[in-house]
Length: 315
Image 1 (spheres, helix red, strand yellow):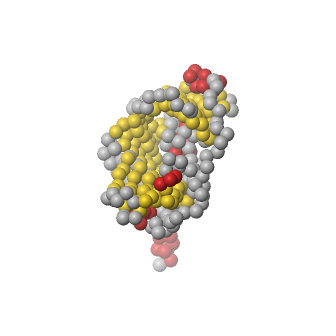
Image 2 (cartoon, rainbow, N blue to C red; image 1 turned 90 degrees about the horizontal axis):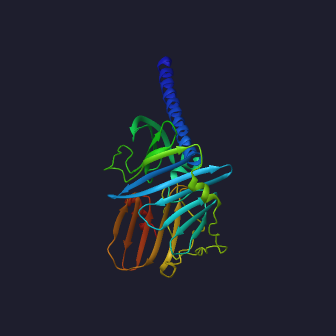
Image 3 (cartoon, rainbow, N blue to C red; image 1 turned 135 degrees about the horizontal axis):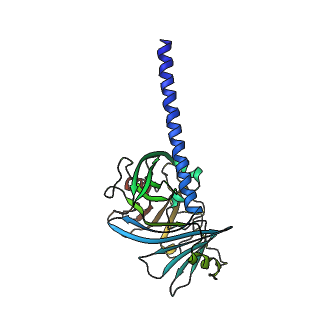
């Protein structure tokens, strides 16, 4: 009897050890991904597929000693250039004043590639999968499975040679991933990594760019006219969300929720007496709950069921 019990305990312990080792292998692979997009000099093109639409971009990145520079060019939005030089991000728009913000990454790129590893490990399990070929490159699959049901899953295909991400699928069901089932697909169409800084980026490091504004954006006052009675697992209310000047006269209450990686906005306004509606733009859900007195709008990378539960919790 004791031998049988010992054998069962040994099998359970061995299984747990194997699972832990597999998870750690996955995180080592993910760390390689994050380092590749921060350390390499590269010129890539990628496409974002969502809702039957495709958005194409060109993304250049480089380092020169202690300086980091990157340039994101949306190919579908003529006249818009996004440049990050160290900790300053410049939105350069033709015939309009430029916007300058602070940040160590460009927010239009996948946040998964830049968020602190500790935060991501608190939200996901990482498991390395099978190998395949993407655009002629050997790729290793990495599954990031959400620990809580309120959060989407990610599948990444990683270039074996460089560690660069070749494709990222955002999934509501971690068991399925193809172009018809993924909510959103981020995929490299051209990749060129060089030992030297590209000439165009070397010029961007030295040319004058607009100075950041000395005026800080105001924030919404802490007082709210309503209470938010429920939060998805892992999310917390951001204490001081940025002011939204265009909406301020119409907003009765507003919350910005974050789990460190994703952000969800919740607005309460006077009712427009419209029917309750739900939309999805790739991984982003837009849910509007309407009654005779109030409209509650929830916007963020969450499921429609989670958005409905958030809206219903407001009192």
